[in-house]
Amino acid sequence: MASFFNLILDTTAPAGVSLKINAGAAYTSSTTVALTIGTSDATTTGYQMKIWGISIATTEAAASWETFATSKSVTLPTGDGTKTVYVKIRDSVLNESASVSASIILDTIAPVVNITGPDVSTISKISGANTAAFSFQVDEIFTEYKVKVVPNTSSLQDAGTQIPTTAGSTNMSGTNSTGFPANTAINCTINGTDLQSASAADGTKIIKVFAKDKAGNWSVV
Amino acid sequence: MALSNSLNYYTHTQLKTYTHTTLAGTIHFSVVVTVTGSRDIISAKSTVNSVDITFSSTAAIDKWECRATFENATPSVGVGLLLGSGSSIASGVETKINVPYSSLTLGDGTYRISLYVQKDNIWYGG
Image (cartoon, rainbow over all chains, first blue to last red; front, side, top):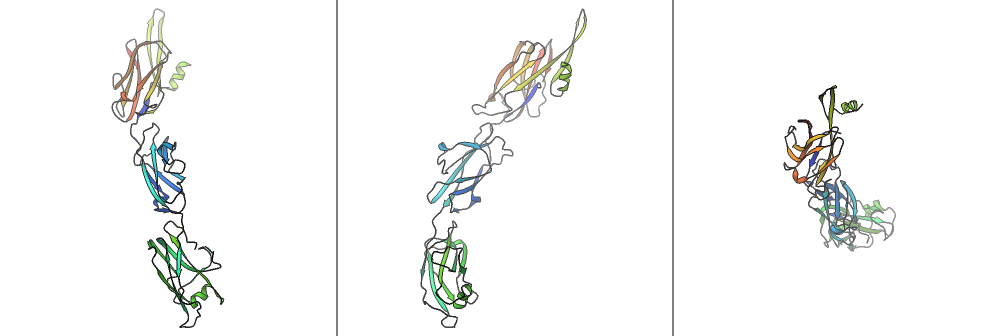
């Protein structure tokens, strides 16, 4: 007990409020995303936050105040497209920041690859009969592709063996961070020696092209 | 014992002695003023926009003043924003005043809320 005490008057809202979804990624293939929430206030004791634009609270009116945290996993509303998440922060004496938002494109649909060819059905390692040509195109922008010998037609992108280019095969894989164009043919050639390296025995080989879109979805068919 | 306890709080509690001479001799008194606040931080927002200040004195007092000094200002009797004042209060009686945020007119920051009491024309506390 004393004949005085200190009293703080604080009428200032939390400053420098920031929000990122999946560390600022442009795309996500999952409705579950990680939010990073920040404020330039030095201490956040007693602070609360309100988040909306998510599955459990699509509007601010539906959102509730909860203890402030710098990271939080949330679920986006279903349905592909641009998703915008909002956050507000208030301090221990209810001074409330303006809302800030961040957006991300939800894309849960895998790209579809269409192959044209090959120009021959049988190849060997003998010059003049050792290459097969085909082309493929993808129905959306994609950032990576690979051509693989797989065990069966339903194999996924992590199965089988990628065909090397050591003996002269072309375009057996590729990456492009800005994206290969959609619906544009990429021409490929498979050399018999490279095919044998990927799958040694003579016989029918199942060759699939897999493409990955900007959200990280790998093609299935 | 009471004096000993008060001395333990000396750095936080205003403890002063005064003397009163009677026919029987000299009697030593002390006045201990205690003040507490219901909050240590307030804002302009409803439900947290005021503070209840409660104080009492170990001796009957003739006057009291509650003042606020801002940040590094030196507190003293008559210095600072006057938040409340009054007249005589009996010893040990708790008095409560409510101070709205709008009384703190010097802006955001830390205010020292001090309670001063007067007895026999001498000010104590703060």
